[in-house]
Length: 58
Image 1: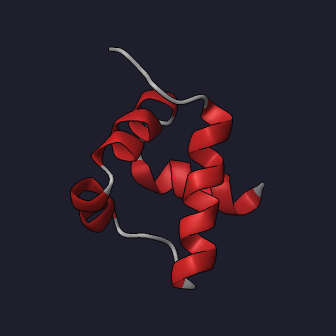
Image 2: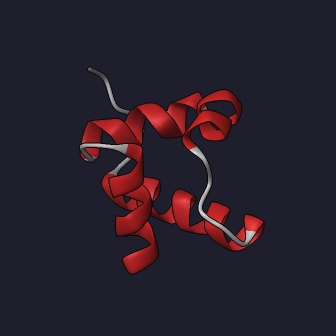
């Protein structure tokens, strides 16, 4: 699978979404609005929830 973002970029984008929305972004919403972010997040992390937890914790 071809990735277009680094793990740092994925974490930063998810963190920005959390700040912007005031809550963790839902998988279904991100899949629709930013499929590239979703694809890259699932490449680096075992699940969307895991990627969000990692992004919030960093």
